[in-house]
Length: 402
Ligand code: NDP
Image (cartoon, rainbow, N blue to C red):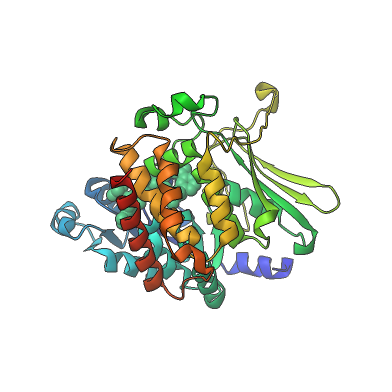
């Protein structure tokens, strides 16, 4: 976008930017509402959604004067309706209502549902031709080609919310595609970064949920502990930025201060630094091309004294290698990887499998799925959903027989 076009866009902006928030009761949802609450003169809320948390959804819908509140579980409609009695908020329930919420006129849709469950609503948001602040990385992993073709077709303005991808977006600003040599995403290494492999086998969900730097939802926190999260992020980066799979890599950086490194062909490396607080990338996605103030702690490099980096250990954290292989394989392999991982993470959280079994189940599911071999992308949402469902069944079967 030229400077003149940016300026005219800023001037043309309505006084208050309207925002719909899919996944309003989660960790990203709470950070987004925190920012909106602090900037009530700049934003207004259109639709808020949740899966089962009626109380929190209704509380936020009342507080922010939302037009619509959607609960995904249909059986909770009555409860939501009662919780919103006496307000102007329209209650709705079910997965179709979730998709409708994504289609309500809003300047910006924040897609922050966790997992492939967010795919239909995130895809509907991608078709609106407005701004999409995307946190729901699993939808890009499961259906990246389809998703990005809808973004391009509709002219949707896609802003990444994932901190590393927001960092890359910023480090690429004003650069030409031909100058990029490599994009490196940083990983904290999670709570088990220094654990020996024997101890990892007995790691509990409580230990895995104790992330050293970030406060996030359960699923992504377990993905961070296995390093699958970084693998999903490499696939996400492949779809968001103009690079090939072999131009993407990950390194471990325990302090989570540097979020990405973009290497250029002249030897320059542009890094993005910030304290690990999701409100910084969310604010960027909400206010781009301007910047808004946030209450996040300011970076003090003198106090930090040192920033360290190390190579990921793919023996102790094989999930990262599996995701990299699925990225290279392309087609439907990432769809299968994502579905199997969601099943395995859920089983680990319910103590049905051990920590190291997560990657094992994903690997076996990938080997058994014939879809991984075709190399072709899914043709539509229905096909993605069907392959996702099949991979979940396969992963359950692998789990039952291992
Ligand atoms: P949470 O688990 O904290 O929140 C998930 C949100 O989605 C909740 O509002 C939840 O509702 C809703 N939800 C879950 N399942 C369904 C479903 N089946 N149908 C409809 N709604 C559903 O997740 P996070 O906020 O941590 O993560 C959200 C997304 O953002 C993920 O894709 C994650 O990878 C990504 N992300 C998160 C970061 C973070 O810091 N948390 C950082 C970068 C990316 P309810 O509360 O009712 O269950």
